[in-house]
Amino acid sequence: MKLPKWIVRRFWRAIVEFKLLEANDRVLVGLSGGKDSSLLLLGLKVLQEHAPFPFDLAAVHIDQGFPEKVDLSPLEDFCAQLKVPLEIVKTQIYHMAFTTEQNPCARCAYFRRGFMHNYAREKQYNKVALAHHLDDAVETFLMSQLFAGQLKTFQPQSYLSRTGVTVIRPLIYFREREIRQAERLLKLTPVSTPCPYAGHSARAEAKELLRKLESSNPRIFDNLVAAMRAGAQQDLWPPPLTKGEFRDRMKNFWQRQELSAERENTQS
Ligand code: SF4
Image (spheres, rainbow, N blue to C red):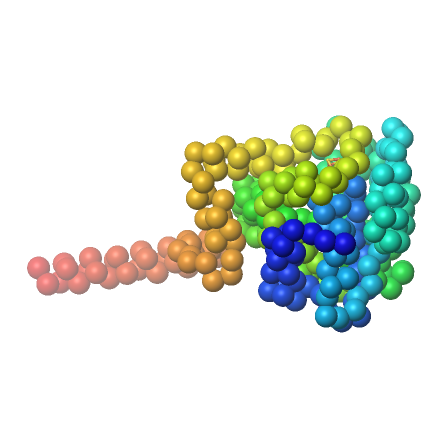
């Protein structure tokens, strides 16, 4: 099985830089059936065939239990073609997360991650590969600032002490438009989601905002990527004072003012 060189290189860059794979890893790919996770599985399969060390590969699809029936046969065919075992885990996430009028994305993603990580732990996979790419990382960075007042994004690799599973993101150096290009090139057939919130999430808004910003200045995306790195040049304000610290600071400030006024009076 072959992939264009630029795609293989992009995978290896992330794997080597962030130490995503090691000999004898048991890797479980979260396969939603979208373009991103399909490319992730295909890429890891190709790497597995040519890597200088052995690792196991399997895929899991978390069925969220939407009332509409989703045809998963393209996923099954894709995995059979790649000779990668696929497990479909049926869940009630739809009933668990879509309970209020509020946007369910955070709860839905939380439950989906939980099912996936627990499945990995039960079946003794030490790594879970997720299909987040560079646009996802930058959108998360932007959303953290806009909606949570924090400067953070997800890591290319993170160890989850509760389950003992390490999450890896081998697509982290791909732009979303490159994944679309790969989708056309490799003739991947994504499974569409029946979720009514797809394309209407806070992430979709951040994506649209970024698209507009980038169309007015193509440097903006790369600047955000640079700002996301530890060690990026910073000139941030100090943290706010607590009430007690402010009281003490105020007292000292007045005392100093009074002292200098007294000194001036004595000298004159
Ligand atoms: S868009 Fe739908 S499937 Fe995706 S996280 Fe939101 S609720 Fe879940």
